[in-house]
Structures are given as structure tokens and as C-alpha cells.
Image 1 (spheres, rainbow, N blue to C red):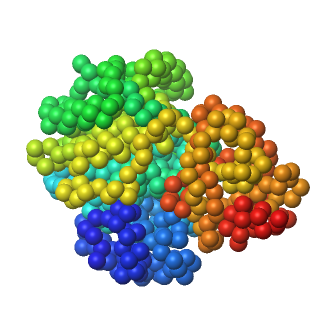
Image 2 (image 1 turned 90 degrees about the vertical axis):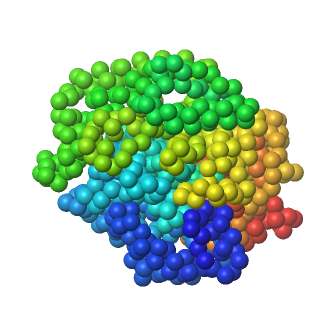
Image 3 (image 1 turned 120 degrees about the horizontal axis):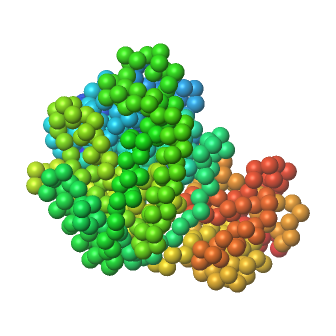
Length: 598
């Protein structure tokens, strides 16, 4: 039987038992979604289509667990394309049916995940509350009188209510974090450009991030690693430059006049309790001046960046003014008051504020903030939609403007039974380093999983604490232990971490004309091979940079997904270089191939 809510650990155990298959999952979820609040999904996948997707997966990859997300059901916010399903952005007049998946959706499906439907949202992803949709307002899973948070409202509720194992949202102002706080979930907002936005209806194109909702940090991080990757078709896609953090970080917290909870003493109490837990974990708490972050946050809606929302839908809005939600229309129309001159002035002010925050970052490794300062009933939000919505973004709106990574985690429950959350924020590309810290903070709170307050977080998804700030590196060929180039790693202070295997969808080739002989590792989505033997080493950040800079073409450093679903930087080869090369995948690894040739 499918659990009431299910994380990756529980689902994998069900499949491994042999008593449950993706076809069983399709049947159970179809019934559960049909009985759920109809405001959660705009377009659920039909039961027949879900069964067919499960059958296709089992034909493509028959062995349970043979793909990183084998048989894992996920929901997709309805401003992200899924081939064959309408993309509405919560505006029926805007609806189009794409022929191709968004880049992130395609990566997840190739890894074995199953789309269960398109979820509701604040129209055009403009809002943090979840009430701005003609398809209804999803509600908090703990009290239907209260908002779910937005704009990724349906995605959060789908995970918290047990309708999906994870869900994609988007996050421009906090839309991937605020709904997580209101539904006892993890909300992971990656660094800008880490996950491609090809196939996303933009809100603010220069700031948008595709985000992940999950029940644990380990699950969210595993999904992010599958979904991420440089996309030349996305002009805002970036190659990561991993940022290390210490295992015992200095964490900035709110102090003095910058502590604003709008009279919500219970949410303030839970924030203080989270700070106490952080200190108990051995972290150093540092009171910081939040003022420059707060002013940067205000630029998103009270400055010229609101014009970017108009730029995304201007032609449609001009032709269909009555199709817009009234609150969304007021926001979009306000953008018409800004000139190009004011846009430049806004940029100048943002850069000045960024310089101010540099001084703060010199004193801390991460920020620990309330995810939202309070929550509201649906009735109250509809009565004052702009003022109350603005309050929800007090501690989230700055993150993309100031180029930060963030992970929101549950912080416990107020006296009225509603959850609240806190967010760890780091500088760009601290994503991997933030995850174990956020996981530790989440586990220490013991808040349950989604709507199940008493559920235990599984040990299998626990993330190891970063120990020394070193960067892991997957070694594939001549740099393996005992092979000719291993000294290039050891001379830089490299340390052996573990031997493991790649995920099944990698192929290995012997590159012609290389001395010493070198392999080319290429990812082939949909391929189901044996997985390839590799080693994980670690280097100090400076040594990692020197090592990566010396790698000759056609090899380079990319993200390699391992058998346990984690993704680590390692050697990948450009596809053109293996067209005439001998494939050696069946040997199971480079060492076995070299030994067979002796």
C-alpha cells in the first residue's frame, strides 16, 4: 500500500520489496488525486496516461532502482512545460500545449521519474500566497482556512498531501520557499542558472529559478542534481563554481529593529528556537544588519524590476486585460510607470546594496532567516491582497537579486497547529555545501513529513556534514588509484574518499591517440548499462581550480550522477570525440578494460 506521504527512501523500499510496482503506484495515485482538493492540480495526468508512462518505464528499465528516480512520481508547476499537457500559467486564455518538455522535466523523466500532473499557481507566478488563480486556491494541508503560500501553491500541497514524492516549483521572490514553510516541507531554491529555465513561462527572466519541493533535504538535493546542468539554449544558464562552507559555520541571524513578525509571536518563537538549535549544533550565531538585504528585497516589487514581469507578458496583457487576476493586473500595470532611466538607477542602487552586503558576508558563512514572518487566512488575503502578500516576501525577495542559494526547512508548529519555517541562505553556488547544514537543522527540529507531524525522517536520506570544505571529484580513468595520472591528484593534496559506480545511463569509450590511454565518459539518457566503476577523491577549492584548468579537450569537468543518485563533479567527454572511438562500457570500468588489454 502507498504510504499517506512518501519520500524517496520509502518509495524505493516499496519497489525493492517486489510487492509494489510503478503500475501499482499509478493506480493508487490516480485514485488519491481524484479524491483530493481539485484546486491542487490544473491538469492531472489521466489514469490511463499515468499507467502507460509506468508501463513504458518498466519496459525501458525493468530493474527497480536502475535509474536514479525510477518510478518516482512528481508534479510540475503549470508555468513549466510538459509535452502534451497544457501550460496555462493559471490563465486559461494564455494556454498552449507544448510539444517538448522543459529541459528540467526532460532530465527528470530520463532519470525514471513519472509526471502526475500540472499544479496550480498564483497567475503568471505573481504572488506569494496562492489565492490568485481562476482554478481556485489550494489551502494549507493543516487548516483549509489558511493560505498554502504561492506562487507554487499546488506543487507544495501535492507533496505535503501525498500526491507526489517531489514537485517542481519556481522561485523569483520566494515562491519555492514560502509554500514550503506553510506545508511543513523542504523548499530548495538553487543558485540562478543552475537548473535550466528553457520551457519556463518567465516571471522575471533574469531572476527566475526552477525550485524543488520535497519531504527531506536529501530528496530535494538528489532531485536538484538530476535536474541541473548547463543548457546552451538558456541564455541565463551558468556553469557552477562550487562554494565550500565550513562544517561549523558562522550564521547570521536577525537582531533588533530588523526582527519583524507583524505581531506573530508564535512564528517569532519558532525562529528563536531554530536559532537555538543551530547554536546547539555547534554553529556560531552572529547578529547582522539585515537593512541592506531588506532594501534589496523591496526593489523586486517596489522598484523597476516589476517592469520585467510586464516584459514577460506585455503583448498578451495588452490584448487580454480582462484575463488577468485583478491583483496581478495591478502589479503588471504598475510597471508601465517605470522608465529606462529608472531601470538603470535601480541597477545602480542594487549594486550599492550588494557592496554593503559584501561586508556582512565577510563576517558570516550563511544567513538563517524566517522563511515568512507570518501567515494569513484566505479570507484576509483576499481582502488585502497586496499589503499582506508583500509582508510574506520580507525575508525571501532579496535572494535572487543578490545571487544567493537558499534551502527552506520546517521549524516546527505554532500553538494553533500551523507550521512555520526557516531558511538557510548562502552565496551563489553554495548549493551543495548548504544542503547538509539544512538537513541537520531540519532533523533537529523533528517536525514530521508534510501533513504527518509524527513521521520520522528516514536515516537513509541523511546528508553527511561537510567536514573540511573540500570539493569532491569523480575520477574515471587514468587518474584512478595506481594508474599513471593518479599522482596529478595526490600531488595537489587529493584524498581518496570512496569507490563507487555511476548511474546506469553512462557509456565509456577508449579515446584514440591519447598518452597515457584515457577514456571518454558520456551520459546517454535512456541507456541502461551496468554503471561504471569510478572513484571519488577530494581537493581543496584552490587545488580543484588548478586541476580543472589543466584538463585538456575534449575532456572537461561536469556533473556525474552516481548510483546512489548524488551528482558530483567529475570527468566528462564531449560527445563528438567518441564518434570513432571504441566503446568499452561492457567492461564495467576503465581499470577492468586496461587489465583486459595487458
